[in-house]
Amino acid sequence: LWSLNNPDSYWTISIEPDKQKYDIANNIVFRVKSTADCYIIILNWNSKGEPFQLLPNRYESGNFIVRNKTYDLPSAESKFDLRVTGSKGEEKIKIIALRNRQDNVKLRNLIPIEDSFGSVSSRISILPKEKASKDDIEAKIINALKEMNRSDWATANCIVQIQ
Image (tube, rainbow, N blue to C red; front, side):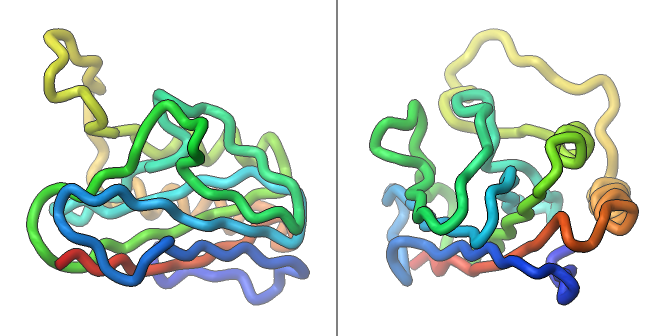
């Protein structure tokens, strides 16, 4: 999934971190821009190599952006921060952009939402009954994208350095 791109797309999506390097406990903001109106899904891979959604998440379910506008995600108005935790290293970030609302719904249903923003202190957690393996999740996403009209989706990657 990380290396998947769509050279047949007539439009592009971009994602860049607001800084090149981050210290532990820093907040990360991504700048996102598309040349077409689209729905976006931002993925991160956890330490086990499993993809999960950074956006949309339980705090921000909207994921539609308009063309040629630069978005800061999370924005100053967002109800969440993306905070650097854990150890030093690289974080892989991928954005998938979809022109079609039905494709957006289909893909969102394949990707687990496992945000840790505040859930550590919660006394009640909602857990999936059965967790798919990282290979299963990635294969489902790739297969779903391959079934979609190639002019209706695009991807971009970035890597965040944690120091």
